Image 1 (cartoon, rainbow, N blue to C red):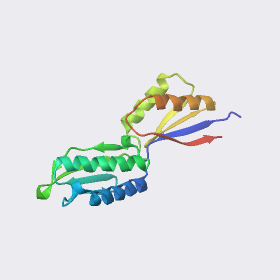
Image 2: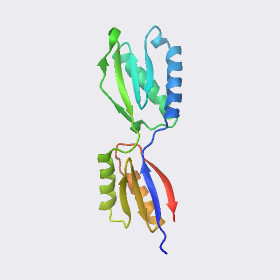
Image 3: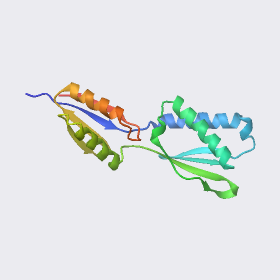
Image 4: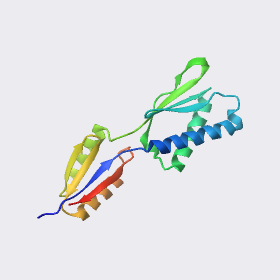
Length: 165
């Protein structure tokens, strides 16, 4: 009987780590002199971060602090999609930052296209918000992982559920 190996290409962001980074950010903002008396804050609404501050300069500083904390917590910045800065109530500004959960369908098609163009003997299937790659040879699967790491798709990718049956 032929052996089959497979793995999944997925894009998941650990929201617990995002919450921890958010708490660290707010702690630092409360202690920093340049934020004294400002109404700067960051909130998490399901899979969207909402940054609020008095002006564009403080919003950018708040974003820098948040990015530093996310990197320290191991959250990839590729998982963040920034909206435009918009005016909010009370003369403040806000920016929405969506956190990527799952591979978007156009990126999944792009991943499949790259794998197919490499002409490796593997099967590729899009299954919801992940891409499953399967083949008989483990070495081929390692080549696919290397190929995907070399290409920049603009998203954070993890390789999980490596199975051998």
